[in-house]
Structures are given as structure tokens and as C-alpha cells.
Length: 503
Image (cartoon, rainbow, N blue to C red; front, side):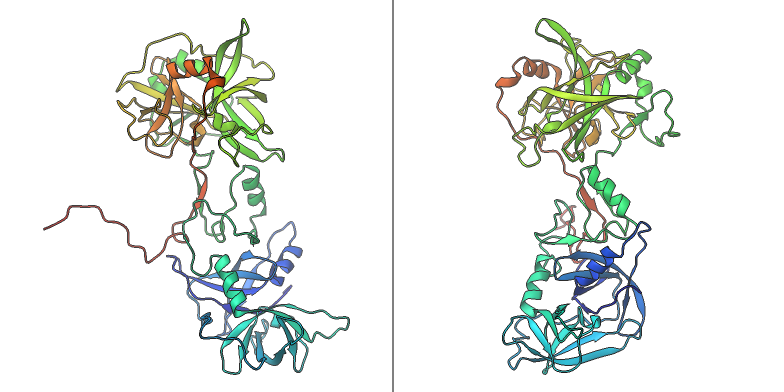
């Protein structure tokens, strides 16, 4: 045992998964982080009033308090946090309680509230020990008045005073933590409250580094330990996968996925494999900002024809202000198996979400698309294929569908968009939509629906001719968020039932 303190049982929440939560001193977190090593195998154990022990999970904390959670509804009576039922201690005398972890023994000692320093408890007898940390302050009437969160280390060895949070301060802190009266249970747009941190669970340190490096939000407490999932991530694949020659990572997990590649002629597939690239943008600290697909095209510029990448302007949008470009991003272009180099933003249109990226060094064995040569217009019910590149290994992804006759259900702020029934994921943003004959139909986007919006070829050509003269509009991309199903769903919520009303 490296460290031990006490804790106070909190009222139960309303999640589907039964949880028992305890509030304790942040000293537990500090000791946990200081004793952590490369093995990353530290465990938290909770000894209950019936002298049994169970595993606990560290979660949120700040400079004073920390939350420990156990799975299940345990035999521990929650504290009464009613402010009206527990007024300030009138005579200034309280009992400081705690529990010894090794023996399970319950301890209490009398103390007095300091008249000189607020939130300081003075011992009326023996010295305070670490067992008092996280323990409650109880009035003579048995009412809860606060919690000890730190010991005052004076010049001498004896510790005769301790710092505590009053009931009101603790209540406000737990509301800030979203432990009491949470505004929402789902994890969409989840962010830690100001001044609050979250402990990386034991065994997940490397996972947390990877999550941060890929630019994803850190999960809420317990989500990693209980196998929660990150939704709307760039690594989500779609359609039928196709590997490049010499792919060393084993068989592809196509399974029951749709068959798209055998609907295209061999030459069309070869052309796609040599002109569809994966792009990623990175912040100054090398964390990823965005990832998408791009198409190598031939574009005339200053009386010469150059090969550039046509892609989505979401690649370089600022996360702080979507109406602006983040000029500090580094762009990387990848064409499997081993052609990878930096790119430079040449021009863009935020209104139509188009960007042109110049590759700093030439790629070999490429077949850029000439989108400026007409090969026929898209038609309603036309068979099409949406193509993308997986950002991890550069796998090609293809999903088939048909062009829709209208865009009345469009979620994005652009009237010129069309829709098709191809089902893609975020990595397919910026990828080409082609006909079965290989003709370029448009560029794909993603709005989280079952349809794929795309900007048709003729509009792209017009935009590229006047790319600097177009006002900007918003093109929201579904943000990644964590999902569990039991931690983020209220057990008292009644789902809306859709059906026929009976008379």
C-alpha cells in the first residue's frame, strides 16, 4: 500500500449503469501520479463500511478534491448534501471522522473551527493523520458540515490543524464537476469544466498519448476502462476496401461489405489508385488537426499545367474560428505505398469548402484527373462510386450509390450541393465521386446522415476560376465524441415511441 485516506459516499446518479461515487482529498491523485511508473499498474481499492474491499477508478479532480467511482450499487450510505438541512455549525465544534484502510476501523476526533483563519480545523486532542484526509466533519447534532482535504504541515512534526471545505463549497464544487444535477449525460461536445482535470486510468497512458496525438478529445471518466467508443473519428472506414500492391498488414476486413471495385473496369481502378491521396494537417505541436481525401488533378496556372491536389477546405479551417484558415498548419500528402511529402495551400474557397494544395515534391507514377474536360453531366439515379483513402494505411475505400433527384434535406449551408446514396465516413471528405465509367462527377463531403452531399463538377470548375472572390459560409463537420451506452444514458429517460395512434 502506497497511500491511504478516507472518502465520503455521494448520492447515486441516474445512469443506466449503477455506480457508487466517493469524494475524497486530491492528495490521493497527487500520490497516484507521483508513484506512477512505466509499468502503469497502480490500482485503487476502496474499503467499505462492511469491511469488504472493491476496485475503484480515479476520475475528475482539482486542487482540493477528487472523485473515485466503483461499479455497482454498494453498501455505503450516501451523505446528505442538503444545504438547508445542514446550516453552519453554530458553536464551532465538530467531529472529524475517518476510516483506517488496513484495519477498517472507524475513527473520530473532536476539533474546533479556527476563529482566525477560515476553513481551518484545529484539533482538540491528538494530531491529524492521513486517514483524516477525505473524511467528513460532523456536528454534535449529527449533521454533515464539510470535508477535510489537506493537512497543515507546520514547523513541528505534529499536525494539529487541517484545511476543510464547507458543505456549501463542496456542494458547489460537485455541481461544477457535473456530479450533482448534471446538465446532460451524453458525451457530445464533452469538455472538462474549468479548473478540473481527469486522471488517465492505469494501463491507458500509451492510449492517451495516441488519442491526443490524433487530435481527439480525451474521454470522460470510466469510458476507457469500460470500453467506450469514439464516434466520428477519421479512422472509421466505409464501403469496400482495396489494398495497394505489397500491402504488408494481412487480409482486409471486408467481410459482408458491399462489392464496389468489381463494378469498375480495371483501368478505372488503376487510375483511381494513382490519383486519390490521403491528406492530414498538423498543429505546431504535431498533433493532428484534420484528415481527409484528395484528388490529384491537372490545373493550368500561369500558362503551364501543374499537378495539384483538389480537396476540402476543412483540412485547413481554424478550430477556433471556422470562418478563417489556420495558416500555421502543416499539410502532409500521402500516396501509397511510400510517397509522402509536405504540401502547401495554394488557394481555397470557404464558401464552397474547396482547397487546392501544391505538393512540394513530384510524385511518381501518377495519373492526375483532368476535371476540366467534360465527360457528361450527372443525372438523377445515375450509378456512382464515392472513393476515399484510409488515413492510417492508405487503403482505398469505395461505396456505391445513386445520385438523388433533389437536395431538400441538405444539412450543409450550400444550395449548390447535390446528394447521392453512397454511405461514407469522415475520411471520405474531399474524395472524388465518379461514375462507373470513371468520369469525375463531384467532390464528396460528410454531414453524418445516411446520404453523401457532393459538390458537382461544373460548380467546382466555376469556383476554381473565381476562387478568391467568393464569400465564406459555414461547413460544419460532425465532431468526434465518446459513446458508451450505459454511462451516458439516463435510466429514467423514456424514448419517444413512433407509431399509429389508436382511437
